[in-house]
Length: 618
Image (cartoon, rainbow, N blue to C red; front, side, top):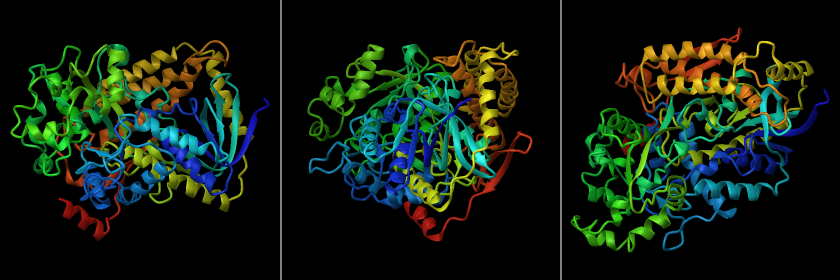
C-alpha cells in the first residue's frame, strides 16, 4: 500500500491542554512539530473542565503560596505522589497562569482587577483561577489561538494505533484517519503522548468518547511502565437524570459557591462523617461553611469541599442505605439561597447580604454553564430546585511513569504529560490541579522533547512493523473468525469495571473481574466490523478495545495488589490505610511473552526541606 508519511522533529499525540501546551513549547524551541488529534481541533475533553486552574497566586488570600499548595497536593494524594512533580507543579503553576493571561485568557476579576480565585475541595485557600464555570473552554481557546501562529502542523480526526520503534527508541507512530480509514505514518525524533484518560472503560463517566486509554496502552505496548493505575477518581457529582446525560460532570464549583448536599430526608449528611485529618479545617455549622464560600478568611470550609474520594463514598453510602434520590443519587442544592428568609437564621445575615445582592443573578453569574446545562438537558432551573447528582468516573491518577523534570518515560524518545502521565496526584487529585498540571508539565514535555530531537538524528522506521500493524487492524473488517459485536464487548467491559472495580472494591470481585477481562480479550480478537474502512465506527471500536482492555487489566491488577484503602482506592475487605503501602508505588509493565507484570517501586526519600514544609502546614 502507498502510505502517506509525514516527517517532523516532534509529534504530539493529543490536542487538549497538555498537548497544545507541549506543541507550543516545542515549536518555540525551533523544531518542526506535528499535532495529531483524535477529534477536531478545539473539541478536546479539556473544554469540559469547569472549576478552574489551581495556582497559588494569592490574589484572594495573601496567606497562600507554593508551599501551602505543595502540602495540600501531597496530603490529598496521601503522600504516594512523586514529591518532585508536586513541588515543580506548585512552584511553576502561577507563572503558567499569568502566561495564559498574557496570551489572551479572560479570567474573572477581583474588584481591583486581579485574577479572581475560588474555593475548591482539598485546597486550604481560594486558589482556582477561573472563567465562570467555563475555564477549560477558555484555556483551549487561548492555547489554540496562540498555537496556530507557531507553524504547528495539525492532523485532525486521526487516531494513533501504534508507536514505531528503532531498537529501544521510539521513532514515530502509525495512525489512521477516522473519516476514510486511510493509514498514515508519522516519522519523528521524539513523541509526546497527551491523550487524556480512561473513562470509557466504565459505564458511568464524565469523560467524552475519546477517553479510551490510548496513550496509556500505546506506551505500555511500546515498553513503558504504568504506575498507580489502581487510583481512579470518581467525581462525587455527575448528572443522574435524565438517563441520556447520566455521568456528565457537575462542577465542584457548585459546592465552592455554596451548594449543599442533601439526602432524601432533607438532611445535610456531609456533616456526619469528617475525616480526622481535616477536622480542624472543616466548618462546625452551616453559616461558617457558607461564609467560607463567600470569602471569609476566618471561616473553615464546608464538608462538601472535602476531597473527592471522601465525598463520593459518602454519597454512595446514602444511596446504598436507602436515603438517595428517586434516580439513584442525592440532591445538590444551590437554590436554598434564593428562598425567602434563607439567611435570616444566620447570626450575621448582613455579612451574606453585603456579598449577594440578588441570589438568582448571583447563581447565574457564578455558574452559567451549570444553569444552562440543567435547563437545556434536564429541564430543571437550578435557581429554583435542587439537582440530582451521583458519583461518576472522572479521572485516573495513574498513568505512564515519567521523569519528573523532563517527562520522558523509560522508553527513549517517548514523553508523556497531562492525565495519561503519572506522578503529581498520588492516590487522589485535588480539583483544579489537573488544569495547572496540563500547563506546567505540557510545557516541560514540549521543552525536553524538542531538546531530545535536537540531540538525536531521526531513527529508521521498520516497514515490516508498519505492515504487521496495518494487517492486524484490517483483520477486523473481514476476519473469518469474526462473530463478536465490538459495541457489545465494550458494553460488557464497562459493566464489569463499573460493578467489580468501582468506588468500593473487594479482592473476590476484582479476581472475578480479571477473569472476565481475559474472556473479553478473546472476544475482542473475534470482533467483526463488516463493510469498508470509510465511516465505520464499528471498526474504530474494534481498534479501541485493545486499549480499553489493557488499561482495565492494569487497573484491576494494581488494585488487587494494594491491599489497603488509600485515596481513591477503597477496599471494603481492607478498609484501613497501612503504613507499609505508603512508601511505594504500583508498577505494571509488559513481560517478554506479552503478559502483564507487576512490581512495587519504592518512593525516593523526600528532601528535608520539603518534609519541613509538610510538617509546618499540618
